[in-house]
Every structure is written in C-alpha cells, then in structure tokens.
Image 1: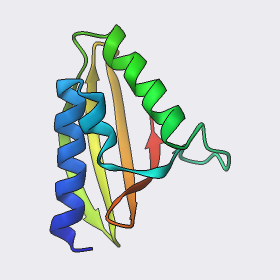
Image 2: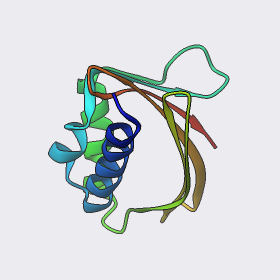
Image 3: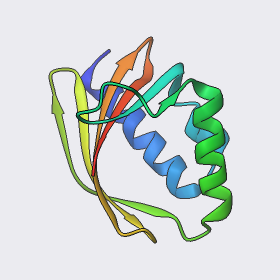
Image 4: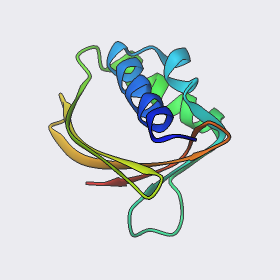
Length: 110
C-alpha cells in the first residue's frame, strides 16, 4: 500500500464517522479488525461484528458525535491521528495499521 492509500483510508473512515454512517465507516476496516488501548496486550474489540455493534450504538445514541482531526503523522507504514471528540471531550491519538488494503489494527491513546 502506498502512503496516499493509507491516508485515504484513514480520512475516509473519519468522514464516515462524522456522518455517523455505520456501513460506510465499516467499509474501511478489515473483517478481522482489532482495537487496543496502547500499553495493554489484550484487545478490547475483536472482529467486525463487535466493531459494527459498538460503533453502530455510538452513532445511534450520540447525534452530536463529531471528531476533529488535530494533527496527522504518517510513519513506518502507520497513520497516527490526534483527535478531539465531542460531546465526550476526549483527546485521543489513534494509531492505524493496515492489511489487505484496509485498516486492520487500531491502538488508542487517551
């Protein structure tokens, strides 16, 4: 994958997140998507079914959900986004890794 392809995937999922479009959002992710909190060895979300359920509920229950990109770094085949999420007020860094042309793993730093 090229850097441009990786950035396009991450940007596309961000736009779908802000539109709260669960189908489009999930289309950027690998069927075996895995989400971690940085520093923890055990993922908190594994597989598309859990991913779709978690984000689908968030999109449905939070009509004013919005993520603002603060900065983006592309390094060693990974994309790192610094984000601010409302209404929760979360300040997070999401680290994206890729497989088979999709986002496969995500690490979150809160």
